Length: 70
Image (cartoon, rainbow, N blue to C red; front, side):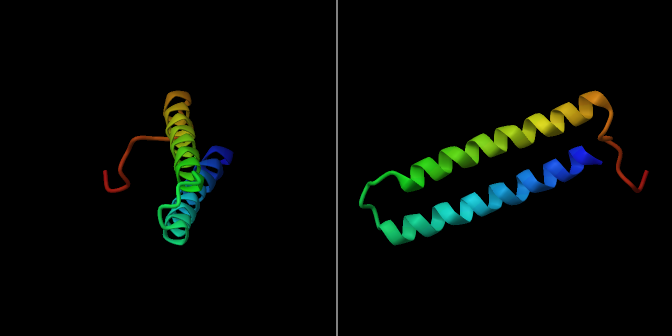
């Protein structure tokens, strides 16, 4: 159950960082201070952590790969 909560938190954090990067892109308007690129790098890190958590959950058996209609 804890792993599922971590996955949901990582998903929402990924979406929040993506929105923040869009906001800084619109506000900075190409001035080149690097805030947008650093936020997008953080987003990639969060996405890798999300994939790692899902892979660990599948490997350990805490997450299943079955559809509910089967």
